[in-house]
Length: 339
Ligand code: NAI
Image (cartoon, rainbow, N blue to C red):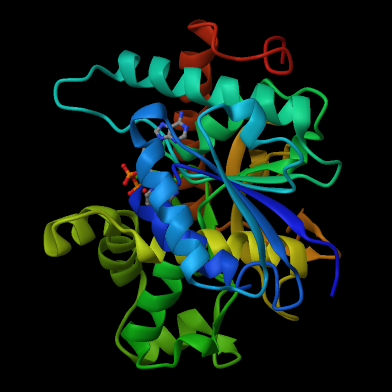
């Protein structure tokens, strides 16, 4: 066996937290040979529920689970963290103003970023799930100037999976035959699902789609809105937001980051931009990335089609506005103040 990995999960008593923890304990995120130490963070009012989840984790008798600890103090919860799943956030309540939402999340992710800065292990990796995920990740990163910026990412893997699944359904293909799909931009309605470089069964997806009578109009009018609005569709049909699919996506995000993307494929992650593809440096935007040897690389080779390019500009504008909104409220930390 290898050394245990310290995994901190925030919002541990919430829906996605509950759907995530047991799979992490079962080794589905870091591998069947990696013991884990779980550290659960909740707010005081949900601490008891998190304690209950910890009892259930004991009852799983997971051979890989070395310990479970529950905290309401971020500094203690993130002590020694190597994999941080930042799921808990403040949802928009009835009648809540956008500014109140920004303030509430600004406070949460500032404190968590500072706690990560204070106590994280050298190899820490962070994925923010709680919405608005990209900007929450930006806030956390700005309060952790001693942690390399590239360790702060946000989840767009669920959007990626939704796009893959829709392509498979539209062409009657197995999902496993769909590769090289990309999600660009913000995890919001402005996100940009891109099939220009996708392959289905080793052939260009555009060609396979055309054989099924699906051309540009289908992509623009059905595929993109379907993927971008899927969260709302799930709420309508299921009567509750996406939970298990989001947990699965978070696990896949961290798993691929640590263990690599499959040969010949890539995935989508929201990561700090290095300025490529015209996305302002420092904004946390979704890109196609390949992962190997414990790191991700933004795919610089793929060329953006005109339509994808235009849509991405709009999504990046939204990200820049979100950054400005949190900056002007003084929510950015020492790393983000000047840039
Ligand atoms: P939930 O409301 O069931 O659970 C959230 C939990 O976070 C609650 O138990 C709450 O007490 C806790 N929490 C709040 N503030 C906290 C803090 N400062 N520290 C620790 N815990 C805190 O919500 P659910 O369904 O689990 O969703 C969580 C988040 O994930 C939401 O923001 C949701 O919008 C987002 N989400 C993101 C997706 C993505 O693809 N990026 C997909 C689906 C959901």
